[in-house]
Structures are given as structure tokens and as C-alpha cells.
Length: 115
Length: 114
Image (cartoon, chains in turn purple, green):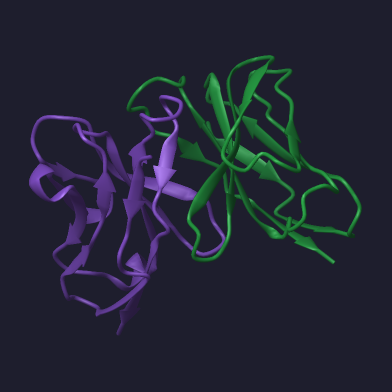
């Protein structure tokens, strides 16, 4: 079965520092990949998505992600973190093994930002 | 503004009671979804619906029921058969259940069993 792994449960970075959140997936072919962000007690907001083509994808709020087929990874990056980026981040992959159109989510990475 | 609304934001239930969580969307989306979120567990799919009057079980459907009588509405009932219902529940929708289509999420309902 497909799966998504986010190895880091909690990450703390200083404001202004760079950020990289890791995401690994298990699927033989090129999947459709997504990154969502969730503020405490809120719903999820899409940051960016990858379907095909350029492996570096730009998203909202200054985020980008790079698809690396050889590493089965889709890591999320931001050059300079702002205090408002503190939230939980979820990587998701399209569910090909089950019902098309459904998403499989990782367990999330909580980001804390130090002043 | 188009979007997804969920009500109530907080819900308290006594053991043995059924409760219904509301989800409404005015995005004209065909597909709707219900997820359960527990700390450190990510999102798990409860039920989904591709079209009016049709829905399918997700990964953790036991103890839950849904209906889809209208395109814009997809209520979730948490029944007394659900052994551990305390969680954060998220509703989502997408244009249709095709490949590579993003899902839009509501603000969530936090259910607590007393």
C-alpha cells in the first residue's frame, strides 16, 4: 500500500533561518504530491502541489518544494522563516492503490519558530 | 465568498449518544470527504462521496454514517458504536474525484465525549 512518511514530528527554527521539511512517499511511478499547512484549531490550506514537469514547485507564502524521484522525496523549503509560519505541515500523495482522487496524508510536522 | 463551513466548531457528547456534524459547501464541488484527525496521526479518511446520493467508506468508517442528499451538504453522524469518538473532524471537497485535484478544507469540528 502507498504511504507517506514525514520523519520529523517537531522542528524548531529561528525566525529568519531557512527551513526544510522532509517528506518521503512509497509508490513506483510518479505520484501527485501535495503540501498542506494547518494553523492550530483550523482546517488545512494547500501550499503547493506537484503533478509533472519541473521538479521545483513554487507555492504560496514563499514556500517551494522539490520532487526527487531517485529519493522518493518531496521536501518543502523556505529560505527565511517568519513567526507566522508556525503551524503543522502535512505532506499528501494521491491514493492510486485505493480510490483515485483520494489523498493519503503523512502524520505531519509541527513547526515552532523562535524569535 | 465560496467555501466550506462546518458546524458547530465545538461539540460535546455524552457516551451513548449519536451526534451529527454539519458540512456545507458553496463551491459547486461534486466530491466531498470526511476526515478524522488525532494528535500525531495525520488525517484518516472516514467517508467520501463523489456524487449526490452516493458515498463510499474510507479507512475508518466503523461507527460513522453519512448522507449526501444535496450536492452542497455532507453531514456526518458519529454513532454510539464509535468507541473513541473524541477527535477533530475535518470536511473537505474537490471539484470532482478525479486525479490530481486539490481538496479544500473546512475549519473543522472538535468533538469531545464526556
